Length: 482
Image 1: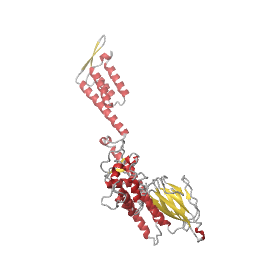
Image 2: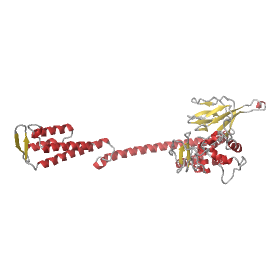
Image 3: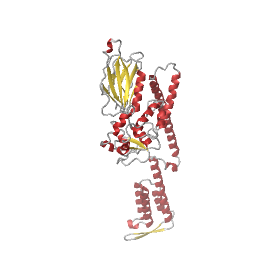
Image 4: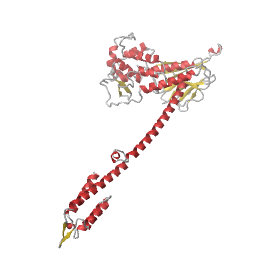
């Protein structure tokens, strides 16, 4: 989210590109925007100022002679940037997709100053003034800002954690998420201690406290750190890395989104970055946010774009103004995104080919098949092992029976003695019925055929070895299924 330094840098950018330019024609608003239309069709100039998290755009009509001085008029438009608002200046050949308010120049080739907002949380007020709900600016009204904080210590809002209190624009107009993390980290203050315990010791020092001290307090840091961001140049906080000077900002950061730092969502679900003990007023539900973008990526993007811009500038003798730099940044960003997309597609196809070839190789050895994630391959291995186990059980039972040469079958009324040789017909039928069976139905049929061969007068006549053999096979099957 743009904070106080970003709003001030945006006003400087508007003043730079609009200096010496005349604007004319209707001010076009996007179809999706629900904010007020701006009616100002005369020839006019544009200037900008900022205060905290607000920026005022002033339109002044052109005075051709002394008689028209009394007829000149001006119009103020107060902007709040929301989450992703910014101003851009480019050729008016085609408006940007998220350009919600557009001011066109008079001269040729026509240029356009656009308020661009991707998330559409930004807003503007035609004929508006600075918001009365916001306190003095931490950048340009330091003494009034310090007095406003220390004179209202009796309010209950000071009982909140200091990390949440720093985002209260009634007292800290211009402080945002990354600034509060840097302020608390450099002041050595835990984020979840009460604001009253931090600010009460400063109430006796007075508002005439000097800014340049060896150990500045938290209110001094609220003024010093935004000034440091402005002195870095560029556009300030830019998580997309479109600014070629963004690497300087990343190096300036010490806590926000830095490796080795901890983070936690406060009671308003805003992420605060800190180091060490968070303090006693932590939320009941602690939520941690993962790193989405490292500073190294932003630095590398900024360096690449800086090289592209310098190479393009070398081909042109007259660069014009700062307006062209924004355009070149977008062109460089588009080229870089296309190259990354092409590289990622080639890498994905290569990975898919490698995976397919590795799978075909793994089908050769059963040890590697067991490690594969294919359910079909696992099923084949299971069936093969079950088949081998059943065959081994049958062979072992038959080998035991070969030691006995005679089997006595007892009936209900008569006793029948049958001699069975080692290479008899009945042994062969039992072996052929059991070996090679794959389904449970075939196994049951083989058991019945084996029992009928040995039992002519019922179940009682079945030999003990055959019953044991069938029981072993059934137990082996159940054990294998488990």
